Length: 133
Image (cartoon, rainbow, N blue to C red; front, side, top):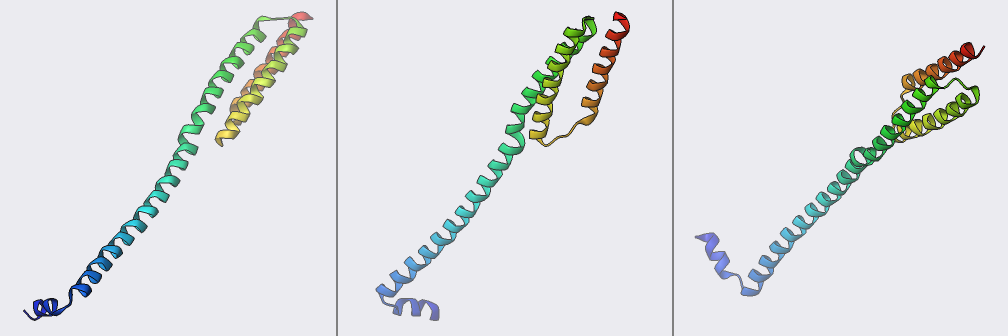
């Protein structure tokens, strides 16, 4: 009862100031927690965009470029004309460059594929030389 008596003895003005001060303190705490949470969500969203959404456009580029490389490689196996082979070789080099740029943009380095494509190009050039001579 002693605590109740002290509350009853306080003036209305002091009670109101104390109540509003407590509400203001709670509001301040909730605001700070909310701002920190929003900042963390923003950082998380940027990371998800950078590591999940952005690579999807590069995957499309990789898919298209790889398809072009396959078509050019097929054509290199079919043609025996040296001028056409040189033209296809230049096209293949351009597609390999696009492919490597997309991989680099994704942060991936994939040398075995490029080495394999280079071997195919060398093989097709050697095949043309042996069939034309």
